[in-house]
Amino acid sequence: YSGVIYVIYYPMSCCRAVNRPAQVAAATRGGRWMAIRCSATRCSGALGSTRAAPAARRQVIQATSRRCDVATYAAASFPGSVDDGGESLSPLDVMVLERGKVAKFFATVRAILFYLTTFATALPMFFVMLAIYPFVMVFDKYRRGGEHIINTLWSKMTTLLYFPVKIKGLENLPDKSKPVVYVSNHESFLDIYTLFHVNRDFKFISKTSNFFIPIIGWSMFLTGHVMINRVDRKSQIACLKECGNLLLNGASVLFFPEGTRSKDGKMHGFKKGAFSVAAKAKVPVVPITLKGAGSLMPNKKEYLLYPGKVEVVIHPEVAPTDAESMMREAFEKVASALEPGKVAEDARGEM
Image (tube, rainbow, N blue to C red; front, side, top):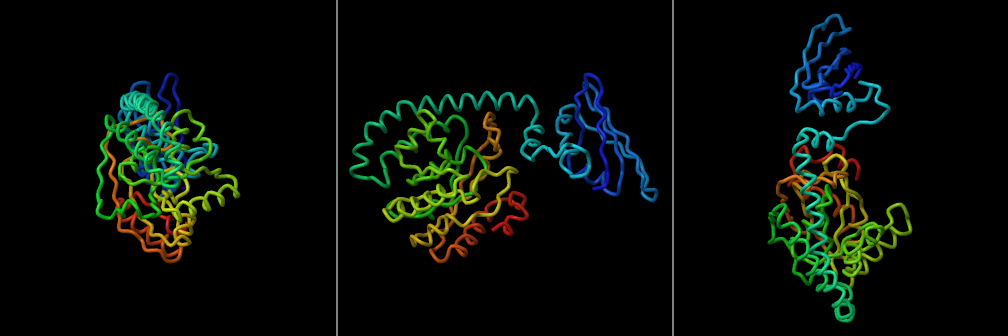
């Protein structure tokens, strides 16, 4: 866009521009110049003029004080509209700002209580896991069903007071004794808590540093979840080999094939690793769609927990064929349960 937005800062002002990004984008098209200013208690509005003579006109943008904080996104989101040093607010930042400071305060309190609940429930369960560990390693070395049962109980007790989990498609779950690769979209720290509600044992992949978190990380080690160093190619290869070995020995594995949590709240293209493992082990892939977790606890906002509910949609399994075909079929199934705006426009091109 050739338009330039100027934000006029007054002493003791809120220092924020106003309006939704789409509206500001429309206002800046065609080379208009706009000035936006905010008073200390409310946004007083803005008067815009244009350099394009045929389309010259005035515009006034008004907003309430509650939305003052949202306004900088308008200037930061559109390249060329303002010299912002290359930094901009993400859609997740905007979502938090739009909800307001009061909601953010209570979300912070809820998050603190959530983590306290997590550790309070995990502590006694950890000692139970530690006690049964020798027996699990002798009789159930790969699946470690006993440890997983405790993981599931811990997750359900932790989430019980904070958000409900609704599950659809339970009929599509494989038999508990059948090894499969589960794949899911990934938008929140809450995703693992949510997936334990499907009542199937699986091993998920987590960065090595998480295994050093007291109690929680140690429990992950006892359950046999898989470590990975994402910046180390050798670690990635070793991780995939370990997952393949688990499948061959009857244990299921969970992958987030996007590779990391979504930075914009949308699902992006899948990576082939999970499907290569499934194809090589000749096991099916079970696609799962998670909905709502990113709204409750957005990525990079783990200090917030908003009220709401999470929905899990379990899709029919994808039969083992070649990795490419399995990846694309699984992607389409996961995407089918999401709203159109929740799938990145270039997601299919990323694969």
